[in-house]
Image (cartoon, rainbow, N blue to C red):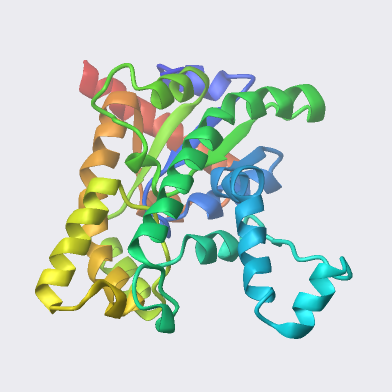
Length: 290
């Protein structure tokens, strides 16, 4: 921990935090509040979708556009430009590229192509996380930002090993930032499942977890791979993915950082509120250690 006590954190000239946890529990909301309060906001998903997967995303758009005669003619003559317009608040281009496995007629990808894109995302996420210290320095050196928040992807726990005390990603991050888990309750989890059921979205899974779920789903439904309803599969997988991630998040907090609750985060409305919350979390961590 780069801040061992509440006083070290409160008095620090440079406050640097990394937020992690399930998507939908407030990471981006808090990051936006801090950004509006003069903090530098580094979004891992934005970095993935622009620096590391931007070309693949744009090429996928072009591939689809080439199927339309008018657009094909314009593209071949360099008369139009197709690009992703990804933002901190709109990550749809990245999600669309990641896709869902299943029946192509229902918008699904063949499982091998889906796994290839999953591997691309894993590499991109690791690279984007390892870029964080560079942006800490750039934020201060170029723009003069003393305070820094890293808004991570919900899948950070899938690309690190929190039980490994020399994990190559967590070791780097913990030397530069305080890692803070936003922990959801059972009620939050159920709400996230219900929200996902209404609008299922692509997400990243560990390779072994994905293959286990894919095999189990095919066995349970009797479907052939090319006949799987993509939305049905990701709905079926989502609750399992949340249960799979929860102990990994908990281990990250136990070995590498702090824990706050989603209910506490929901009460934060200013940088001052956030500073007080992290000081409280450090005090609790210190009392447990004692």
